[in-house]
Amino acid sequence: MHGTRPLSGKMLIGGKLVESIDGQWLESINPADESQLGRVPLGSARDMDLAVDAARAAFPAWAALSIEKRSDYVYRLAEAILARTEEFAQVEALDTGNTIGPMRNDVTTAVSRMKFAAGLAYEIKGETIPASPGNIHMTLRVPFGVVGRIIPFNHPIGFAASRIAPAIVTGNTIVIKPSEQSPLSASILAELCAEHLPPGVVNIVTGGRETGEALVRNPKVKRIAFIGSAQSGMAIQKAAAETSVKSVSLELGGKNPLIAFPDADLDRVAAASVGGMNFGWQGQSCGSMSRILLHKDIYDAVLDKILDRVRKIKVGHPLDVGTNMGPINNKAQYEKVLRYIALGKEEGAKLLLGGGRPTGAGFEKGYWIEPTVFGDVTTGMRIAKEEIFGPVMSIMRFGTEAEAIEMANAIDLGLTGAVWTQDISRALRVSQAIDAGYVWVNGVGTHFRGVPYGGFKNSGIGREEGLGELLSYTEEKVINLCNGQIRGE
Image (tube, rainbow, N blue to C red; front, top):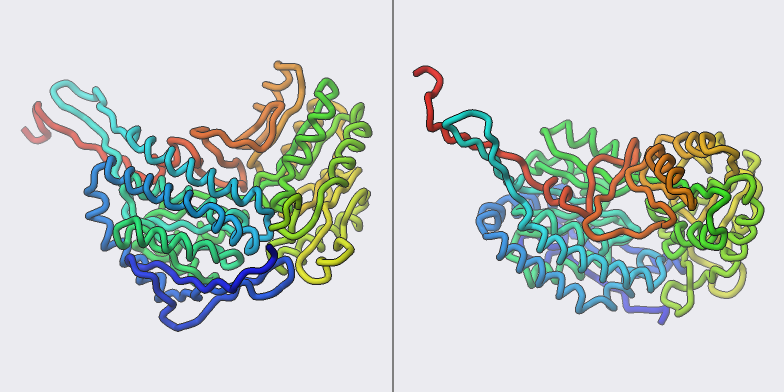
């Protein structure tokens, strides 16, 4: 199945599916052939203000519900999303360019995370503090009110659905702004939220930069969460602070190192290097292992194994069975990736595979780039320092453990890392020394339910996917019961 009827969706504001006030539309382009895939409303700042007001109006009644009732709502919404897995996956594959298998997994993973959050909400607890005799000092966890969430283009339903749950199960209401590059699944999610949640609890406003900026700057929004690039994250921090004090969490880019020592299983290192690159998303994932640091004694052997695996990657239409990699998500990103490939060659890296457009039928139009591998990459090269967000691997060589750590930490990003060795002492030393928020030892890429995920340095602030994410949607309030002498007596 390569074609589909154009999808025309709507936004969700105050429980109603609506078009934009201005009557403008945002077209979504199929990255495989550059045809129009569908359209959603091009929301304006006025639309966003209405959504925030709707969320604010819905907040008191929603926050007054018991955790049990809010959890039930989240669970029912999760089941409704699960029932439409194939529809979501096909729309997502066409809209993002990502292959169909990972998109199905995005839906089921989001549902799992929603149900996890629904149950974990019972752990949102305060405490008593024995600060003084005769008095009782206790803390409560209370919701912020209206929170905002901005979704990236690479995992639209995965991030939107899973991140709704922690925000609303803790008593907040939410306004979601999907990416303008992959907005179509948001319309399906809007239909389900309208059907299964009270009006105004979840609001979804599609649009461009103006729409997102209106959400970030609205003083009624007390908490902002964002997944995206470091540059966008910094701009959001600045804009949020210009109108009111807000709580901001950011999961940002990564230029993640996989470090392999001579005692590692070389076949597994090669498999982890290619699997961790996330070619099913064309490398368009903040967690992609785009820097492979190989000890000099195993460099040639592992490189050959990596190249053998990359050569077997089948590039093709995202809905085709057996396709391993689709097109880049959008034209701007496509052109960015090509610029970095040119930079790599200019800076002296050795282009070993790929670097151009695939040949053959089906690749005449669209944003296609071959899986690309550079060898002999050094830390001073831009392809080793900057997030490309595309299917470009940089293979690097090190001699000592200290050199590997220095290379891994030589950039201003620090999301994830991986260490491959059979020496447990070395594994602990190196994993602790890497400046990253999440490090695998003899593993790569897998997220585990309840384990916090987030980055160091310019890769973000805050943690998601665990209890900390739920707590981040609450404020701590102190109540003192004064049974003894009070000041002034």
